[in-house]
Length: 50
Image (cartoon, rainbow, N blue to C red):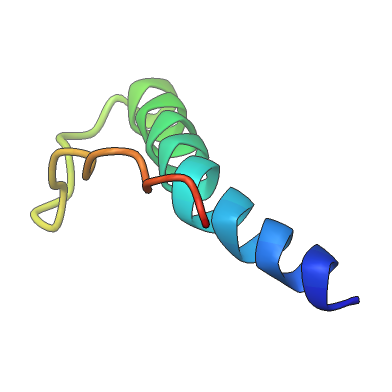
């Protein structure tokens, strides 16, 4: 289970931000509304875990 948690944490850090951004852009595009004020550029991908 410990390895699974580590993998999930790495997965979340690496990919969820990208997915959230894509989903946000999709929603913004569909609603035809301006980007929210809290929109920020994506951070660099998380480094691989040791």
